[in-house]
Image 1 (cartoon, rainbow, N blue to C red):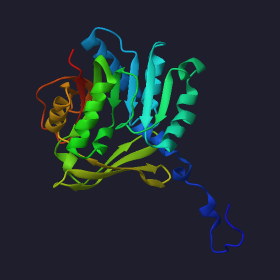
Image 2 (spheres, rainbow, N blue to C red; image 1 turned 180 degrees about the horizontal axis):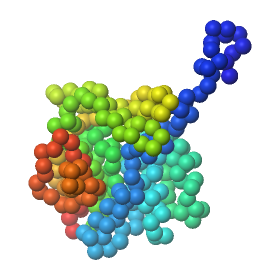
Image 3 (spheres, helix red, strand yellow; image 1 turned 60 degrees about the horizontal axis):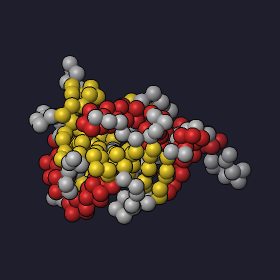
Length: 279
């Protein structure tokens, strides 16, 4: 409510906008994540490669633990460890995602406010580092150290799943808008330094009433090339394979990823990297 003492303030300014009422984490989950298809890929690929079902998963840089919750729902034998440095976002995930699980499912998920570079957990079948989160480790030496730690965190036949993006648009300063049901998602590549490969990117949300949530999320990370990622994984002891997104009749990505050794020089592409611990 507007202050009675502020005579210059219009009553209209006290009416909350759609941006005021929106929750940035919900907007992120609706526009950036598709945990169902991600877990489909991870679960199916592991089974094909290892000829068994995976049961234990660790989600690094987990954020709201949305992906881990989907994993927990898949089988009664599945367990998940969620790791993130941001206690606030972890709490949001507990309140909004984990709270929706059944009591039995909740017992199978652990949330750890910790650093992926130092944490030690029981060996797991799968480790995830999705949404390009490991790019926050902007130095080659640090990234290889992280990959080595993941190698040690996996069971003997464990698999590390990552994603990556690229294409010549990855190095441009641009904005990309995608319409969702109740808002427009805006990916803003605000700054790219070609000398050190560091990018500063923002996520904004624009709503139907014209209001905006600017810089809801900001990322400063290294835009790694695919050869760099593969080299670092190899140095850490992994055998890595690129799963390239296939295209529909219009040349757009169709959400199907298969192993490839050659890719098209598209303006923008997204791929999974499946890093196996050699058996």
